[in-house]
Length: 203
Ligand code: GRF
Image (cartoon, rainbow, N blue to C red; front, top):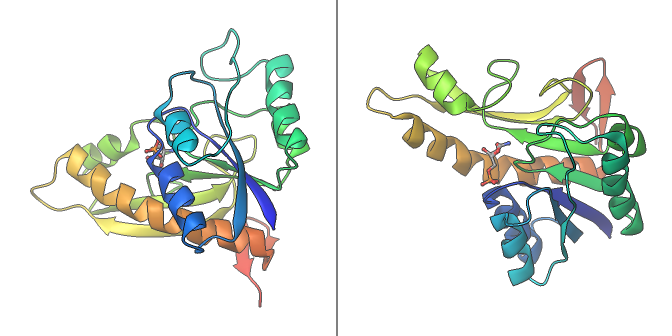
């Protein structure tokens, strides 16, 4: 059984979906720990409720990234628990060398837009205000770009005339919970190859 870890900064609904899908057998993996840069993250509370180790690691002096010495503590925590796959789920930090090197090709992220459109933050609102007729969500490998690594899976949802950014975000979130599990299963199975930027399933 492979070990996965979830890194989350906030409310943790994607984490919740992962926990439930492990519990119901839709994901065959062990959730070794949930790690947060926020001591009071709801995600940590959700983990504890399910008997999963919840770890807070002080993020240090920077707001949007971790200085190398701090990031190394994240690496150590993951290596101590023999984590095979790191799943970012609303982890609000840009990863740098220590994590990207230690877990090369083994870190994935969920993003609430159809990349490469709308990378960054508050993207459900940005997509809504731009006037797109479809948005959606993307699971991708994490590299040293912001939301720019190879795409594992995506799904589209319509933007309806009477939507608000919040209604659209909720429609996208529902799909996030579904496709993150699919992507985790694919990556854990190892049944894919990466050809340039293209992640291709193999049987
Ligand atoms: C999700 O919309 C995810 O796509 C983005 O951050 C949000 C996290 O939500 N990266 P939650 O904490 O999983 O509820």
